[in-house]
Image (tube, rainbow, N blue to C red; front, top):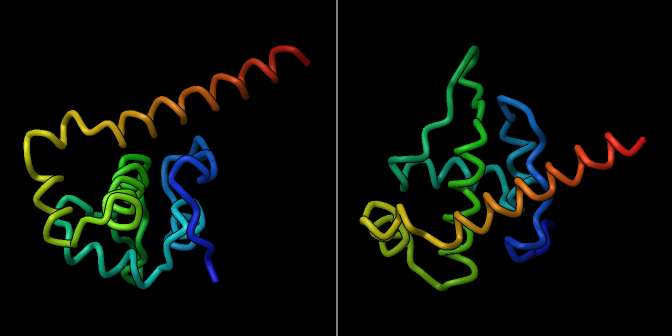
Length: 118
């Protein structure tokens, strides 16, 4: 059972190009069936599909999923409300996504600094 962590407690997104649904499930603390459901509900969420219809998510998909997760689980939006918020102009200025990106960059920079200090 996945515990209900705040977005701020989610793990760092590794510096990879593609992620499997299992990896995204862990990175976003959302079960795979929920991710598949969100694909139907949020038109902007479109992972690449390859052989055997396997999904491969990119970094921007992971950030979007974390944003959706925050809107639904932390901010109390309905699916329809979250979809509307993401499609509106304010989505471009969404603080949640900006904070995710800043946190991610900071952790990546700290990782680089740690490597350089060795």
